[in-house]
Image (cartoon, rainbow, N blue to C red; front, side, top):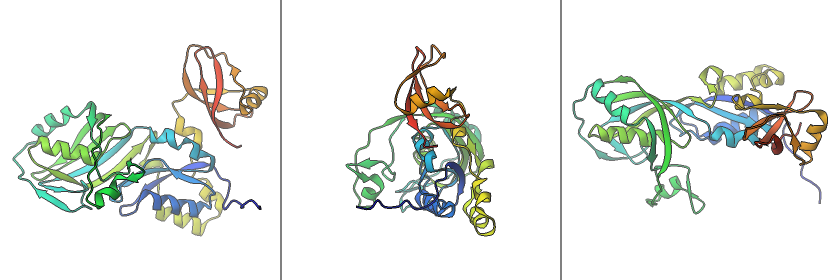
Length: 305
């Protein structure tokens, strides 16, 4: 039986997209994949269709880093409209209740925000991509089905009040993976003795990437249509930069071969247990290894280079 040929280019790197509102993360991913004519692509954490901002998209071998980017910290700007609760927690949803809005000052709000900084338990919303028996929760929610969800630990590192008026507030939030900003906003509104929903959500940073490194899909399309493929490729971030704070291990030619064949090697790095970046004798990044305290290094996820 003939083997099916691969479609697209063998290209590796990460492009930081400034996702527009109204588009799902998967639609953004497919558009990037087409523009680069890449044979493989994956994004690193969904943004709601209403949300905009930083969406790292991994191409080729860089898709092997997607899990690590999913686990990275994030930063957001979010605006909450008080007095109205929707089923989705944002303005794309249906209104399910109205609440009074009490008088409050920025100082009152600042005191409430302080309560939400630190480690805490959060119950994920029904309108989320989490799965129950293989079904995304948002699909069940659209059928009117409510599933009990377990709370999980998140960390909010900082909340900064950017603006507020009698009916709304805007925040800058730095948080851990798994934090649902819609839920956070609803909980803050409840502490104000009201209710609320998200009307603007913009991811300003994910891992070490921020908006200064991003490009819009329209700008990417223009590059693809008006310049050659090298101009597109120049927009890619090297995959190793996604792990900028990781220890780098530089291997000899012999040790590089051993690692590629699944044989652990000894290093002179002692007393650390960590995942590390691997570079071969040509200083080419070729994957992730696991370092033991006794200096033993073994392969964990390798690139084809």
